[in-house]
Image 1 (cartoon, rainbow, N blue to C red):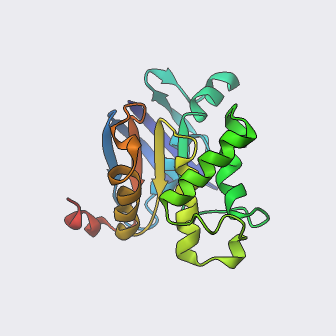
Image 2 (cartoon, rainbow, N blue to C red; image 1 turned 60 degrees about the horizontal axis):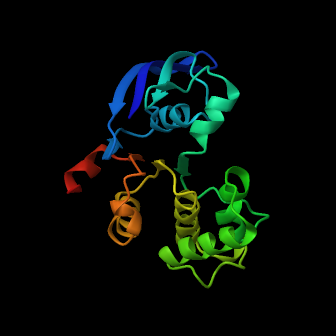
Amino acid sequence: MIEVHNIHKSFNGTKVLNGINGVFESGKTSLLLGASGTGKSVLLQCIVGLIKPDIGSITYDGKVFTNNKLDLRQEIRRKIGMLFQGGALFDSMTVEENVEFPLRMQSSMTREERRDRVNFCLKRVGLENAGKKMPSEISGGMKKRVGIARAIAPNAKYLFCDVKRFMNIMYFNHVFLVHSPWSTDHRINCYFLNFFRPEAIVHSP
């Protein structure tokens, strides 16, 4: 379970988040809806630790994430997977190196284990033949799929997705929840989806 309590955040005197509270229960898909510019991405980045809130706290399964010791924050971060808007790939790395990046940074896998995991995730998104390509050599849609592969590579307990379009959510569900063996794996307790348009909810099953 993830709990958000009284989160405030301002940039250059402009208030973006003003006392945000919320509880995201384990095993459920949580959707954050709102118009462009209302602070959805800022809240998401506060929750995963990319931005420090001015006031407030965030807890993961009862462990305080904000303003805690570095080793505890790192322990929680190792359980987090993140899908950024547009994929946010490293231009200087190949597709497979991008997917492998969180495994090199946060796991104790051997090189062979990382390679097997990368190949598995790329196959999951239909890019098994694109591993050696650079981001500049693939389309925008392929970049988004590489971003999904990188997000699921660590087999994270918490999966956060900052996406704009409803169809991206549907594709993610197709790849991750329907055709993935992890859909029945209780190690994945929660993932978080961020929509661009409030009206998208009318299409949601």
